[in-house]
Image 1 (tube, rainbow, N blue to C red):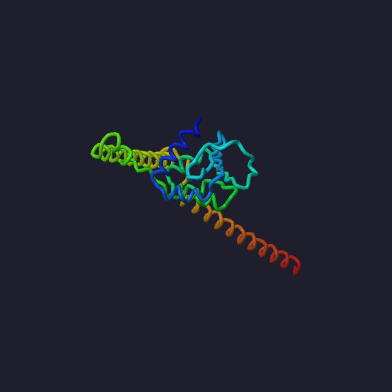
Image 2: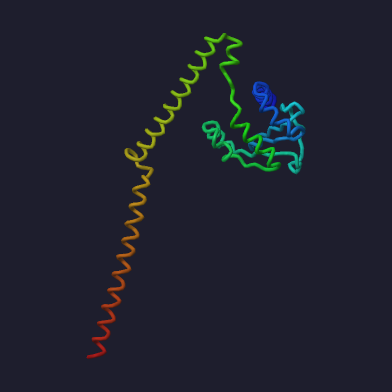
Length: 201
């Protein structure tokens, strides 16, 4: 079951940060439902400010918060935690939702501390540094791949159009439209003059 590892992980972080558990204690008894379309995680805040599995309850429960997340937005949320809330549709208890939002941004896993208990301080520092290096390398590779693909589709196999080209095309269309309107007015004036000449004759 997905909820068990999730609850264990979050409770581990809350146990390391008493201030975070204290914030959740104020919402003891309330439930949160994380709805990711493919599945739902339901958790309840206990009296100690930790999470436990929640029973399946109606979405109309006033002490419930529902966090609706599209599966396609999960990578964006993982990539930018500061903007994570902008990808989540929140329903229910506003105060509880605000607390969850703040905790999602403020809680951090202290990997070095946990690894040091298993492997010692020196090994933990090296493992975390290596992990950060791999992550940075993956980000650089991802960025480079994006730039290369964009260049390919813009220059070598044009399937995309640069924004400047779209703007220039739009400006040219507007200019042509104005020129055509001016030409039509001139033609109308010439026709009127020709008609006046015919009448005078």
